[in-house]
Length: 121
Image (cartoon, rainbow, N blue to C red):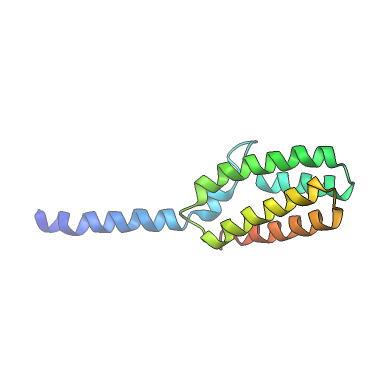
C-alpha cells in the first residue's frame, strides 16, 4: 500500500501542474462580458481610427479592467514576457489616447493584438 501511494501522489501532482501550465488558451477566453480582451481591443481600435477620443478613453479603461481579470487567470500558464509586453502596450496606448495621437495609438493596439495572439503559444 505504501508503495502505491509513493507513486500515485507524485503522479497526481505532476498531472495537476501540467494541466495548469497548458491551459493558457482556455483561460485566455472570456468567461463573461467584463473580460473580453479581443472585443475591448477592437472597440478601442475603432474609436482611435475615427478619432473619438472620449469613447477611446472609456474603452481603454474597459481594456485595463479586463486585462487585470485575465492576467490573474493566465499568470501561471503563459510566458511572463508576453504578459509584460501587454502591460507595456497598454501603457503606450494610454499615452497615445491621452495626447490624441492616432498613429501611435493604432500602432500600439496592433502590437498589443500580436502579443495577445501569442499569449497562449
